[in-house]
Image 1 (tube, helix red, strand yellow):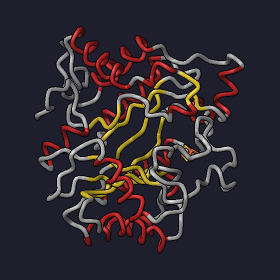
Image 2 (image 1 turned 120 degrees about the vertical axis):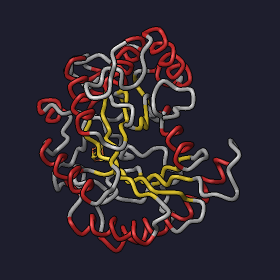
Image 3 (image 1 turned 60 degrees about the vertical axis):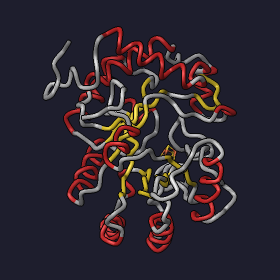
Image 4 (image 1 turned 30 degrees about the vertical axis):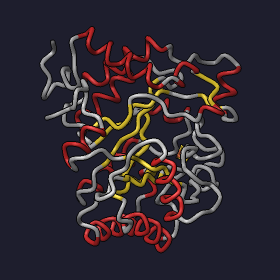
Length: 320
Ligand code: SF4
């Protein structure tokens, strides 16, 4: 497997290996809400979630249609990078809030808008495992048939396998719910990307690695390793201000991500190894704003250890 010079199988490497070119994500805000915010499950959301529903990177929150957000995003992107003219190289990322929590007709409309764009190679839908009823799964399966040359991924925010932490962060569903959604998506051959958060209050290194080893056994298509960000205006920020927990130091985080990567099988695509928190409302840890330095630090850490992704995964690893 070609990892294109990285010590782990990044999304960038997957795109180059599978589609034979680089791809770029455009984050979208499809004007959803979330059952953990609208009162169905809870009204205060997950403890770390910002008012923007973890979707501050979406190009527009001003009620613009998905197609318009995509073309705006593409325009912004093309100011920074050279986009391929002749091939679809955009991943439409439905990021803000819970992107399967809306009437079916609306979901069909927004997903079709993105999939039908000649610039889009696939869509990635962030949602909760308790928001994937049969009719939504059937819709995704049908869209796969309508757009066979494009991909449809689902991103599930697991964050942790530990019940006590899940209760503390007010996740609002149990591990069994996640497992059921994961299996049903697998039955439909829809690749799943699982989000985890490193540094949640009260979790030990051992517990975080238990979550990662669980994912290694589960073998999702992809994993996101997200550093816990404390965002201003969240309940988590109040706990932090009261001194109830500490955020991870940079050196500690780098060692932890290396530990995680070593335990994840080499075939799992790593979609994120840092935090992508919005800088304007980030309260801590501020070192995470320098993403390049975090990525360079991770390379150096793995290099020093002489290790790569999967070297400690029981099925595939050979501990160096
Ligand atoms: S499920 Fe997602 S959008 Fe909903 S409160 Fe939690 S983090 Fe925010």
